[in-house]
Amino acid sequence: MVVTACIGLGANLGDAAGTVRAALSAIGALPGTTLVSASPLYLTLAWGMQAQPDFINAAARVDTTLDAPALLAALLEIERQFGRQRSGEQRWGPRTLDLDLLLYGDAMIELPGLQVPHPRLHERAFALVPLADVAPELRIAGHGTVREAALRVGHDAIRVISG
Image 1 (tube, one colour):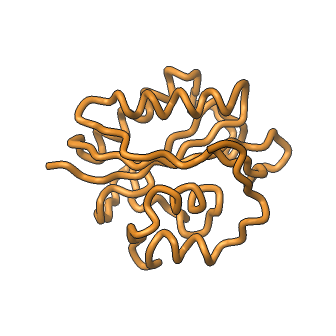
Image 2 (cartoon, one colour):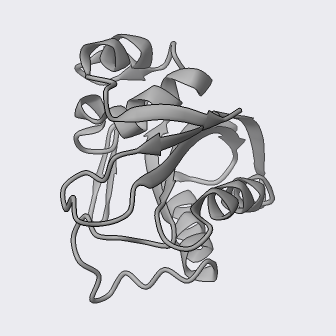
């Protein structure tokens, strides 16, 4: 069965824009997965821990036959290939690459290490604004469509840097 899934991408170390672009290609190359669309790249002020470089963020919409845990495992492997080491990492700190499974069809998933829709998605402009470029009509359980949620959050700390 093919499911539409949405992935948030972010990076703020090294060539962050190049890393996000390369990660989009890697996502599109996953088995049973087609990259349907990708948002422009956005420059976003650091969130959580603010004493770090700004982030490059984007979102991808894919069609996949992978189940949600397998898709997440594949995303974590892509992170590792780009140098991310989650162990010992500071929460909300700098990173070479961050891939988050934001939506998986209309599923609500609560598993150890996997929550879909992604927790606090509806509060985060750095995830919602790019997501609205690729999946404005998809629903975030309990929060309406992506477009509606994106309109409710402030956009002051995010701007397009490339299409």
